[in-house]
Length: 540
Image 1 (spheres, helix red, strand yellow):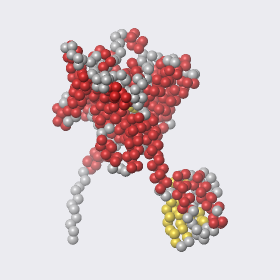
Image 2 (cartoon, one colour; image 1 turned 45 degrees about the vertical axis):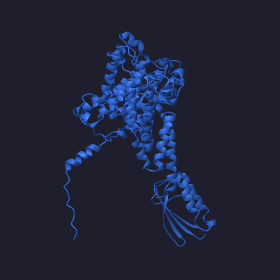
Image 3 (cartoon, helix red, strand yellow; image 1 turned 180 degrees about the vertical axis):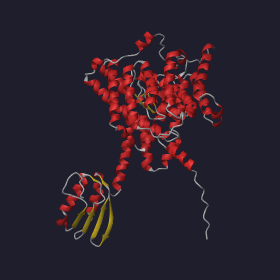
Image 4 (cartoon, one colour; image 1 turned 180 degrees about the horizontal axis):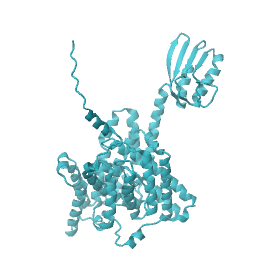
């Protein structure tokens, strides 16, 4: 007799804890997460500041407009959103749209009316529960998007790390505003190398790598990114005071507008020109922004959920509502349109954030810093911030992502690679469209290979075909092929009792088979289907 292994009693409390951990709504209480969230908010603030300024510059908008959107995206959308880790702000993916729209509408004030309308449309999309669209993007495409953005961040920030700051921070499209592209900028960088920038960027990267080690996480009181910035500012000040050739200044530093009075603040913030609201071009721009911003937000939300260590899932419809409210406020306050942004969100995740308090705090930091210490912020070398972004990009595009998909088969790694390459060579949305198209080809091929029926029995001349629950137009090919194989004298029973939905195309195939049965000498018995009615109706 073989002995049975002893059973270990289950701990009900452990089961409940595991269930809570898997819950989409589970989040650590603030008293436990505040330290992690506060540290992550500083990192996100340091990443967001140059991106807000750079995207505004590349969009042809006032510099402060990008910061306004960053503040609203952090404080307002961070509070309204159901996402625990996604961070919203001005999006590089909208840069070309904003630049073109401002030119078309004639002024930034007229463009702000379109932003308010786009926000209202997003609220409507949220109420219509359009957020479900985000669930239909394959995992390979989402992961390819993360990898593509990671590579873009690295390639776009390397010139800044070498001291070549010809293109604004935050530009992610292959073609840059200065008529260069991603690769030509890397070549031109070699003619504009600043040794001081290399020193600061290498030092900053070394600090970030060191701070990521387990022993440093136990003893470090400040985030590595903040330490890198503080040391970068101090070291560059030493270079400047000593007259060293390593000193960086001018375009190599953060350039935030310095506002000292309330009147200057009022002058720096634009207001919507409501007189243009009846202009059809304004509504066209609004629809474009609403659709593109919503799609980019849903993609970023899905991607952020994928890299959340706690595997929480944020409600997509609530996110559209939050984004809509945020964009309406951005338009009213003179800001750029916003989306959920994967660069800030990934920096938030990898900095150790636990709750949405991190996104809210980063917005508070943006507001406080811009109002109180703009002069100090303008002493931060772009090379240091480039190092922080390069390290974030490395985590997004880590080689283990490629190795993972290489083990999943051709139908997984090809869409992943195509999406990554397409984003690198075009822009985010075009890359997603191309990657999704490749995935759809594999999905269609798989569907065509999968029979929409089961051949239950084939005894002598009698055959019984059991149709499956759902038959779409894609089922037409393999079903037609099967029906053509029955020779004269055959008896065929087509059983549709399990069918729940049949497309009109499939019903037509069955009708044609039934109509031609006598001429072909085939006896046909249809069970559970009413072929006399259109629209996929089923018999009862």
